[in-house]
Image (cartoon, rainbow over all chains, first blue to last red; front, side, top):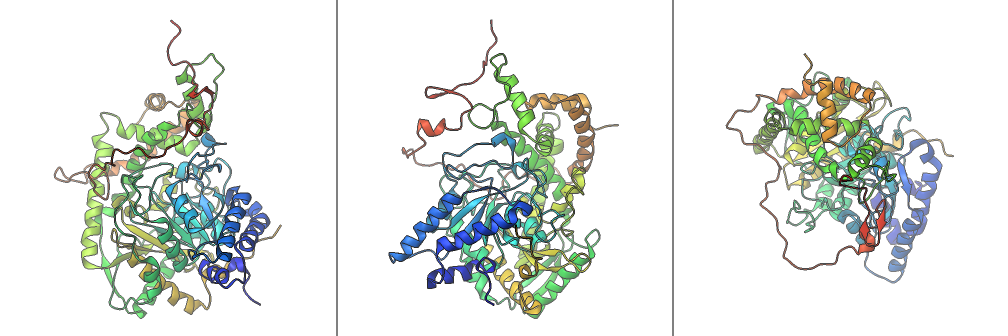
Length: 501
Length: 98
């Protein structure tokens, strides 16, 4: 029996489209049907843009028929995280605050996707304003992990990762402020990349923590992720932190399958005690696979990383408290209590009380505190200095090795509700991913097996120096090929069948 | 002793323009205490000589040429307004009655 089209990789779908054995409209319909069949249980999507997706697919088919030269990803469906503005399509950021808002413009990421002919199926669920590690903070209900519907799909981009694992889309876009692309990838057995800060434009990405936020590509394979990376990355004058340099050759790097002589550093501080045993087991097996492929493994120490989590939970809320001030009920979003008797300020206070969820309020209050006079030096100022120390730790490590590796998260997917009343325990999910954002470097998570004790996916993190994102694709592609040949099939093909409704 | 009092949290909520119920303030005050305890580890780690980092990839002020480019129409700009009058955002009163 041939593989059903929705279970294929984006690269395979691209070949089928080019060969004419399937049309973009058929491919889009196959995914829309899959969403209709399984998303009642998974709840990866907040909005399905059936008409828009089919119109884009028809346009691609027409161009192909006319003999036009098409991008390899033209006609391939994609799930878009609901934090990116798409013209005319509801964009909520998982918040009541933006219920009903339809942006009048496209984010640059969306513009680039449309230009390449990628078919945007709809908007995916997320923790409200990207604050969370489980997607339980969405105002529209949680997303469920396709590997076990009682467990979280990671967060904040749990909708995007679940859509990939449930074969609702072969490609997805995530955003990563402290791990929101990589941790969801890890717990769903998919691949996610946080590019170097500034490699992908933030224009049209609703801001959470501007100095950390970065959009990136997600897929089921390293090659598909690389193809999507090249579509969305590039200099954008509309983002003043965009890096004005050519996009590297990610696809070429992912196809190299050669890491002979490369030095790979294992970060001593990101592992060991407190890590689930199956996570450590699979991580160590992946290291052996890298050695077999010809790499040299070196242990490196990054002593400042132990302060990264604390620094992050001051810097990100501080920036958020300022960024989220824009939700004032005056120009867009909901407005509550405007009955003619109340002042603008009273309406603003009521709207923000109703519009924001618990976690968002918690972070705004924390950020406001950390920035207030009298506490600024002790909290925000100290955190910014730690950011310097973390950057220096990376610089010292990258002077010795080509890339650094660690588990993506300390555990596999936990149960929905298990940590929702303990913010400090929830924040610990991000302990391995956060140092990357503070230093602005690139990082990938790819699956390295299932934990023996619970049968759930384990993520392997590869960190590369700033502006050298090719290196993580080179190592990731090689590791993926080695592991898949030992398993006999890709990890995502082992996911349990979902009930079809 | 608590690192932060309920009154301080209420003050922060006022500064943040978020109306909060008494129950919310109680809950948040106890949570803030725990969170501040864990994040206060940042204090005293870095010496005086360590400069702060605000952006990982350092950049100078970035300016674009002063050239008019296409932008949103008034209709598009107002498309998400909770209330509007003609080509303007309509907002609740911002000054007192007197």
